[in-house]
Image (cartoon, rainbow over all chains, first blue to last red; front, top):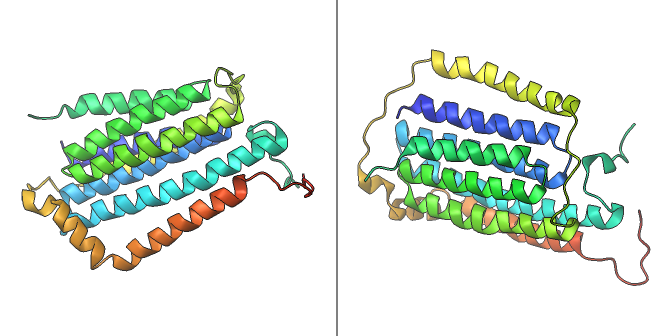
Length: 101
Length: 169
């Protein structure tokens, strides 16, 4: 396994995340896309950490930080989803259009 | 024993495909769990059992389960979205394919260094813990503050309005 294969795989995973964020209309599905993108970034960090890092602990620690921030982000986002469902009766992204010009 | 990485990658792609294409959001969450489990296995292959464990604990055990609860709180489990029209899917495919078209030539045309074999001691949990509590101590503590604020914010956002207060929207 070379570094390139890992980076290409992470890029494919990131592309899946982009597609989900842009195309899906359910708020939770959009959140799933964000998680896929964060995992692709984590995978990149771990691959670089494995192959080119001088200090092998650094990449793993950054991945741990990404996980902590992802947990915080999901907690906030899911509470927003629940609140949107309560106030609007649905969690489609099309329901959220108050800021439309 | 070697971990079949190609199998893990195929599993991860399959899970990600389910996660982005399933019409039932609950199925999408399960696809995400499959993909994240495979990513955890890849972390194991990349030499870090600790980060792989955390991946399974936090993502599969925490985030996926929280998403399942959010699905249950926001819609009927068996409900199926009408799905996206082909225009919407094309609009989603354009940036994804454009990203791949830009990034793949960059990744393949530049000589990346070959993999050196690292000593196993450098990958120990001990090294991670020492770095977390010395060099990265400030970030570590800030992350705990961020998590605390996220918990408080989630409670504040998701709580029902008190009786007597008007619903604003």
